Length: 462
Image 1 (cartoon, rainbow, N blue to C red):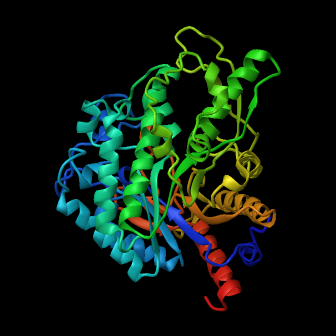
Image 2 (cartoon, one colour; image 1 turned 180 degrees about the horizontal axis):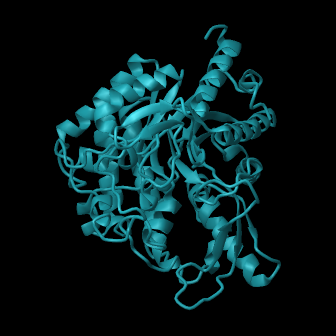
Image 3 (cartoon, rainbow, N blue to C red; image 1 turned 45 degrees about the vertical axis):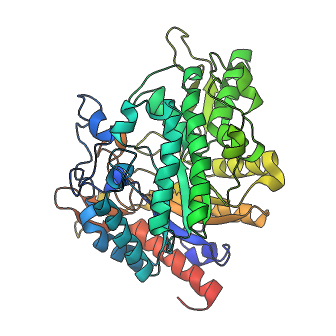
């Protein structure tokens, strides 16, 4: 590992590699009731008592809506090459359909222009775990019409920003939306239904992705893709029930998205999924879903061990997936296992061969307690080790011939972490939420040195 020698680590990465950070709109923006923004599913969800462990919400969050200039100045100070952020559908199109809210579009205009002025590439994600509440009232992602509305939203955003934004992702982690928002129910809108019955959610998300890809391509010369939350998973035991349960989870978490886009079908392992509802699939759908993409984003945090549920009574999932891999662990209780990222990359290359598009790591990082010293410094050596470990795995994958075009730390700022509120800290920039004061953590300084050394090795100057 090259924790103490970022120059050696950076030298392993090619020219034009995107070094960036990532955020999501609801988690950092705040300003929920300003400038014509409409109600989102998270606004409504968080008004229900008990939805968040600390009773908080995203009404202020990291106040990125008002402090964006300061934030992108910090990005420039870190020598970042790219910033991946999501746009708020509710801010741009309050009802999820119909005319745009000019004030919402103007905010992203300013953000994009400010990034470009500082030499930072904007990377837009159109949908990251949030949507207008009005569309949820009409069925949300269980309704086929939402796919068409999303395609129209993509066209609207690309028409406004496509002349300046080269890099796009349509949907962040479709299976995460299906699982946490419609099965487990700990994310908005908080539905709880059996896994098989929730399959229309992922089909409509992928249909929307295909429509959005076509819409963006008509407006911009751009790289377009989507992201998937990928994890190696192994059977909890050799028992037949555990092996079957693991196969279902593996297919859903790792392959349902990419099989649909790259093969034009869903994984055969899901043919035996209990209660599987494929009735939403219509002739011609996969022609839209498999619209060619230019790159594929990957989220990686940890591996799983998966088995049959201990009790099948009222079980919404036909499996029980548990984070595994040993210690150390993050404050989420997730084991730190960099080698699992290598397993994901190798498995994708094996499954898809020449069909596999260039990859980009769109989320990788960890939640850790902040160690604030007496002089105000925030040392996070465990996070530095985490980042170095995963980047070493990427360097090995590059040497093995796997094309990887970028790496985005999750996250740039400490933020509102969905059902966990403000109880976890993911940022390489510390946010003191009462004052909104920003402070670089040691990991931010380490990342800056890595990028500057890489830039020197590849371009001859920092």
